[in-house]
Structures are given as C-alpha cells and as structure tokens.
Length: 309
Ligand code: GLN
Image 1 (spheres, rainbow, N blue to C red):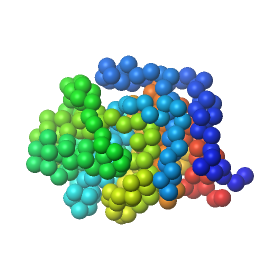
Image 2 (cartoon, rainbow, N blue to C red):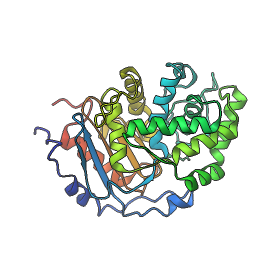
Image 3 (cartoon, rainbow, N blue to C red):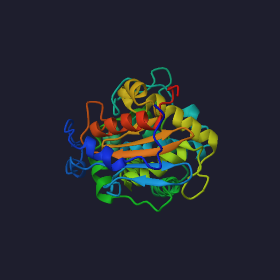
Image 4 (tube, protein in one colour):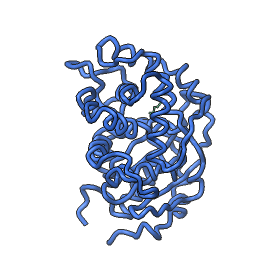
C-alpha cells in the first residue's frame, strides 16, 4: 500500500481513534505535571514546504520537559563548535532518564538525551552566568520554534526545588570534573529549559527543523548546520526514548524524543517533523497515546527509516 499524503491525512480521525486508549499514568514529579488532564491529546505534523497540519488541542500549552533535550544538544554543539561531542557520550544506556550514572571510564554523561547529559548541554551553551545561559537557550529554542517562547516560572521553580536526582547528577559531574559550572546553577538552567512552554504544533515545527537539515521550514531561517542537525537526529534515534529506544526504533522507526509532560517530538529525516502530546505515560516515561499515534503516523505516512517502500 502506498503511503498516505500528509497534506490531506486526517489527524482528527487519528486523534479520535486513540482517545479511548486509557492506559498509563500522569507524571507526578511536580504539581503542575500532576494536574495535567489525562484526556489531553494533540497532534501536529509540519512538512518540508512549511505546511502545518494540526488536530484539535494541538495549541494547548504544556512545559516541554525532556523534549527539550535534542534542542539543548543542538545549541551546545553550535555554541562549542562541536566540542560538546568530546564532553558527552552518545551511547544508549538501557536505563531510566534520571539514572545516577556516568560513563565509568570517563565520568562523562552517557548521552545528551538522559538528564545527566542535558544538565551538561544546558551548561555548555554560550553565557557567563545562569541568566545569560537561560536567555541564550530560550532564544535558540525560539528559533527552532519560529516564535518567541517563554518559561513557566512556577514550573521552573518546582523543578529546581524538587529535582533531587538532578542535583545529585550535577554534583556527581562536578566531582568527576565533567561539569565546570556550579552544580546548583546547572540544575537551575536545566530546570528553566524544561519549563519552556510549547504546544504540539510548536514542537512539530521544532522537530521539522531538525529533520530538514537545520532550516526551520516555516520561517526559512537556518537555525543550526546540517551537520549539527544530523548529529542530533542520530542520537535521538539511538537514545531518544531512554530504555525504550530499541523497541521504539523497531515499531515506530522515526527518531524521536519523549518527555514526562507526555509530549513526543519526531524528526523523520528529510521528510517532516511531528509532535503529539497526551500526558498518561508508560513504564519508560513514554506517552501511551503518543506511542500509538506515532506508530500509526509512521505506518500510514511511510516514515520508518528502515522501511523499504
Ligand atoms: N524535568 C524532568 C526531570 O528532569 C524531565 C524528565 C523527562 O521529561 N523525562 O526530571
């Protein structure tokens, strides 16, 4: 069967089809996430020509959480001229996103898609202090999004206060000499990056920018080089869904990043970006409906990177 045309593909029908799916549990790490509606479901797809397709609720705002990690990695690569690749591993861990573990022989974070790695990438972007780095990150994320993004300060505050494992990881990296900024500063900046507000439509534009070689298809702006985009999408493919990355690659076959807000950002190389948000999560912290939507989109639009047409 030939793939469906993404220009006319019925995202609303897909949304209706997954709504009855009620498995999974909403994250409770901070009050704002615990209050998210388990019924929220928004889907968006952004094509190479800048066409934005969206279901209902694709404009509902939520904090980006770990879906920010590919973009932090991209900004760190950009600002360090690729040197970030010497400072962070790129191997999958087979462990949870917040595992207190570094590479045993180097003390580096295992990869940029787990918390240890993202704490470091957020510390490697340009800026002499936490405020300057936060400002740089928000500006960089806004370029990926094609609009001015903002931080939810309450989410950032809770995340900073309650992120004990992130504080532990930052201190561990200080002890190993792999984190050069102060541990608390590193957690503060990472918490603010996780607290940036997006919606499914915005996240799909961001995913499309990575999928399409670093050029935002809506604004036409080159945000990062094709090389940086390729590096980031490669690591999304191997590490983006934590200890569920292997299963994800087999069944969905599209480089992606999951997050505790229930968002998933997908970058189908050379084709399109997509995003889905639905808060109930499975054991690996992947949105239950998000997975089903991603499998369906991949099958219907022919997105599996190893699929032979
Ligand atoms: N802010 C969350 C944390 O660091 C992000 C985790 C996630 O989305 N998996 O705990």
